[in-house]
Amino acid sequence: RVAESALVMADMPYMSYRNPEHALENAARLMQEGGAQMVKLEGGAIQVDTVHELTARGIPVCAHIGLTPQSVHKLGGYRVQGRGEQAAEAMLRDALAL
Figure 1: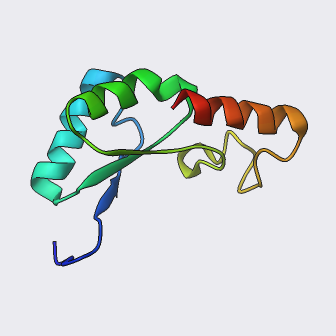
Figure 2: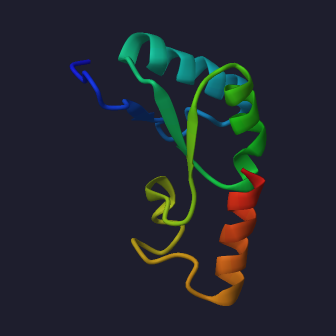
C-alpha cells in the first residue's frame, strides 16, 4: 500500500486457487482490495489451466516451482528440489509447461 516504485506481488494463500474460477475470484480480490500488481501461486504443470485463465484476464502471474513452501510437509521438509536427474527433468517440464 505504500510501495512507490516496487512491484507488489501477493502470494495466493493455500487453497485459494483450487480451480481456475476460484483463482480468478481470489486474484482479483488481492489486486482490487490488497493493491497487488501480480499474484504468485505454487505448482508446475498442474497449474497450467489456472495460469492461463489468470493471464488471459490480464492478471500477471508468478508461478513458483521447486521448493514450494505450501507443500513443504509433502516434500519432506525444506529440502533442495531437483537434485536428481529425474527430479530435475520433472522441474524442467513444469517450467516449460508454464
